[in-house]
Length: 249
Image (cartoon, rainbow, N blue to C red):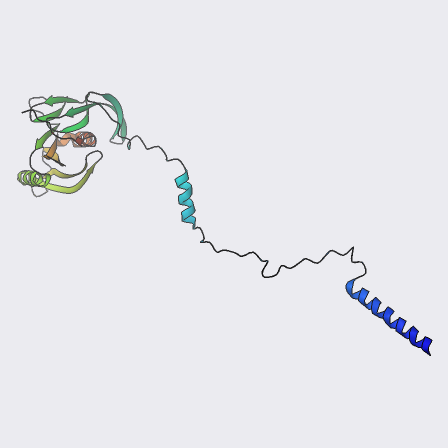
């Protein structure tokens, strides 16, 4: 009886061992280990950062790139009185190479470039004129005249507008921009009073403010040459800049 009880006990232990081996796996060495799962304390902490917007990235890339060189029209070289050079203008849709000379007039107070092959420079004590080389110098029709006035730009413009209004139907632009001189007042006298017809001679007046008054540049041209001379004078005025007057006593 005792022997039978011992056998039963041994069998029970053996069965328990077999069950335990089945649950844990007999070939534990061949089975890949289970991946360890980090506890909450071991998980890395994610710090929220603001998202970079596409615009910001684009701006950063642009800022990192070297700036593109400016076009020739945007570069204003330092020129000395008497310097000569070539440039290209557009007339009636065609390119034309022109030859400029840089001039400075301290008595009147301005600098500009003028086309010395198409205009003759005439210097007087109180004005500069650039007359077409096709005109009679004693009775010119196509010319640009520059002078100085002690009046401020607004007062000078009002006086000029009143005078021109007697003959022309004028147009006035108080915020016209020139490439080098910046903002000025421009008065366009290109129609007869009433605006019904075109006069024989046209005028375009630029009044440029200065610390000592203003500068007045008036382009005169015959109606037959308004397209050509009008555009040429426009190119000349875009080289115009105001400097202080240095009049001799």
